[in-house]
Length: 367
Image (cartoon, rainbow, N blue to C red; front, side):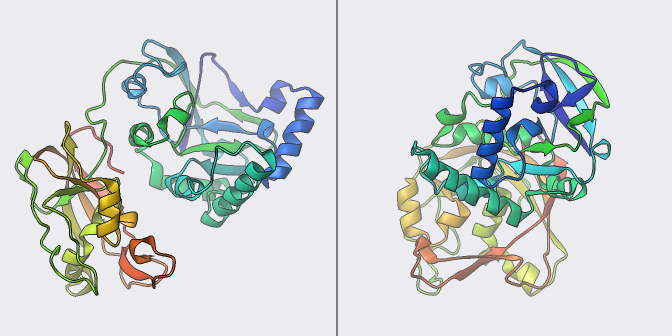
């Protein structure tokens, strides 16, 4: 697997800060912080890498050309590293993943008390280890990275949509999955390097939401309507929302919202896969408030459903193949407490899916 490192300087080897030279006091502080955060190695022993090449044509525009590093016209060296050249037993962390972002969003990061914040980091690092996002196997790291390949631009766009986007506007990869590798020996050889220049092109879509359909020729403007199951009692839940057009932030969430209507294809008719078309909204449309959606749709806190209540232009961007996960078990399904009520009994939402893009019509990330 190839991974990527960017800098204004050209290097034959990528070195950790310790190998570059740090003072004894800085090293002691770094070791102390690592212990408080529940990490086996200090920050000075790592190097950061991207899982994909950065979206060099659009990254400046994604940040509205306000980022001090990712700015139009900036020239950088793109260093390409082959993971085969990294000692297999090196420690790794895959950071800023959606799962870890969701987990850590529960914490109050405005707290300045370092003893409290260190507890947040300890819990976060435990969760990363549990999910396989940290460990001592580069081969395991490569396997875990596969789900993020080809999606870096999409995650940058998503990060700008977050309510706390201002908190990460100066970071290199805030809320964007990337690697922290702690190489044994502190040095990683560079396979190749190339001078690149960041462009100023705008991404095709800046409000990255998805709508799935079996129809490959939906009209370019969709009109609000009642979904086919909205008046059906689901157990004891009825979705009491006005006519709308529904989108979700990821393909998994879209599929989860749709699943009650299409489950028969997997569960009864045993289709090996479903081929569906991915549409994204273009321009601005009025939305039903998130609060109202979450108050009236029992699983909206899982599906992330975003409801537009006015006619909405859409573009078809891809055809995807969603694979049947087979026998449904607690390990390959999503369950939720209705309305995120901790006292409620968990209910089945949908299976966890894998999918492949089989046709790409526009250069829009599909997450």
